[in-house]
Length: 223
Image 1 (spheres, rainbow, N blue to C red):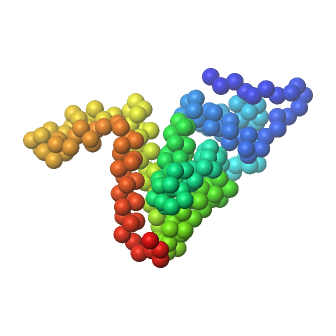
Image 2: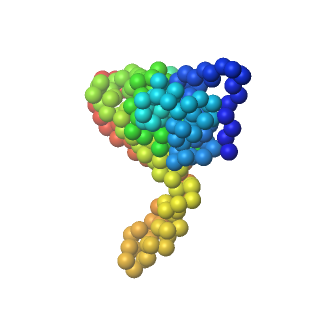
């Protein structure tokens, strides 16, 4: 059970967006998204629930701030790893991997991030870095923008599936194994070892390679 943060006697607890988002992420790690409520967050911070609405009009606003804070954990070096000087695909891969790592670092991290549209510095900085890699590689602005959306959507979507599968619940791969019979679904049965695998790193790397290979066929104004 989460205990309220310490508060000096006789004084109101100081709250701000950053501290509130950090506390919400701590509660998320402890109990998951379903248990995260504005009242529970207020209790953990030692304030009245109404005080939070000064900064977050809705829970969705809170989730957006949490998503923004998660991307703060992406190191600035993510776009400048091995091959950064000459290989745009390695830089793009590094950014996508860093985003996945940031989402996996938090319980239900992908669920929090999905559907948010933060305009904070960390979110926009990540998107700008990825788009910059593509534009510097010679992709048109339109293709760079759509590639950005494809990479983020794939990363968030697969991480969402990964976090669901690895928690107890209806997404357990054993249900798929029991449901797929060779007589009724021969093609699924043949590929079941991969379909029911929980090696999501392999799934992620495969899907990311497909995206990158698809980008290689697009026209660019430089090799």
